[in-house]
Image 1 (cartoon, each protein chain N blue to C red):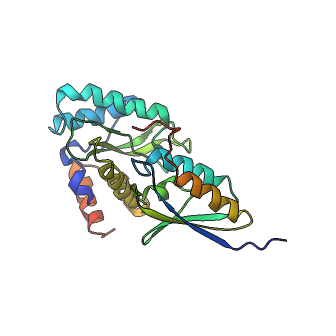
Image 2: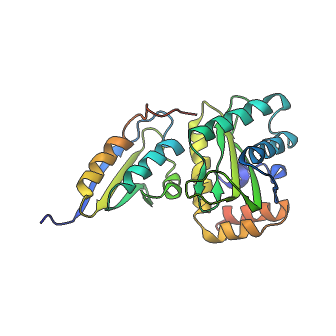
Image 3: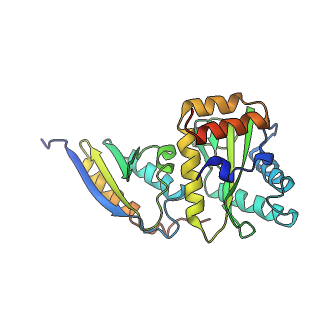
Length: 156
Length: 96
């Protein structure tokens, strides 16, 4: 599985300016709707499910990264949005630091393997300091997408 | 004085949704409660059990076999307790 297989390129937000974790999540889910990956009817339900998951424990896993996610029956395969924030978003992260990189995942409930493989893929790249550095330096959707392709080809 | 050696054990993932983020948070928290160095291995991937980001790279699905190894004074208890935790069904946490 490669990042480019499930990240929705037209939903990438290279500079997210929001005041809260909730606004960030709403913006990313809205991006997936605009991209046509989720329907307008499902948007509110997906946001609610992601926020509910955050109540169980922040997906701000530290090192400036968050991976908000949910399973939802409206999708038949794993999809993901990416947003970058140079100001940082308060995600109530495990290390207390702001989040600059957000990967939001929505996966089908009956295929937990898709979700796990998505997390595995994303976290493998996020362990690479250069990947994180170049991601934060990307100022356009195209730059982010090019970086994902390079990461998929193990060129970073 | 008890010598600090390596302790190892195998464990099978039984949680029906695999080791997603919530079980992994509990695993990292448990690993952090020990002084030993602890690793979890799946195939060729060997990760630091105390790091959530590292644990996420395991992609451990139900039925997969993992190896836990620990080195240090409390290695034996560490392996024992992590085998129980990792092999559990994590019923105490909500699944999403």
